[in-house]
Length: 194
Image (tube, rainbow, N blue to C red; front, side, top):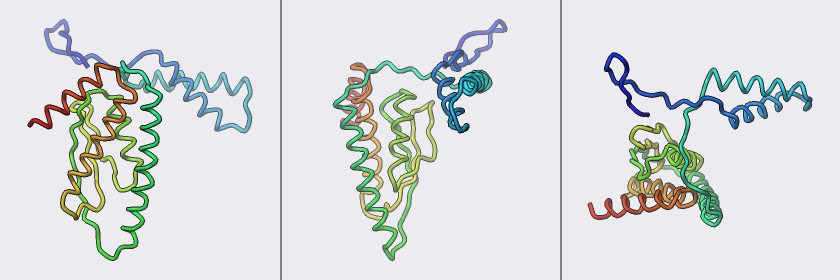
């Protein structure tokens, strides 16, 4: 969001909400079609009208995306997600049958990327893996707050934080622009030197 002066000289935060949103209208129209037992022209038109009304009444914030998908990196991202999913499922299953009570923690992870798009994808990929829950995502600081399961062993909290950073790096490398990848690398080097 940007600040701009108003007539009275006060700063005003410009709205990031978009106007006409064709993809959102189509998504709502498709959801509308799933509510009916058959697809007819009337249902399609009604779905588009409902989509238009919903997007005008509840506009989504616009998200800037300057990158482009890299097919091999996207495939790697998806494969690693499924590997993480299987490994975490086994760990949570083992923990469920363990007689000891697990220690849990809430951690704060300031992401290296400043994009709402990458913040959202990183949060979703972490939330879908068993054993971690994203409690909050702060757009203003690109920070995720996660609840981690079973952090009783030494270094478990740092492992959880490192996992979030690895997921973010895979997301940016799969979908980011060359500049965003270079910025991620620069921030990573700065953290290693600090």
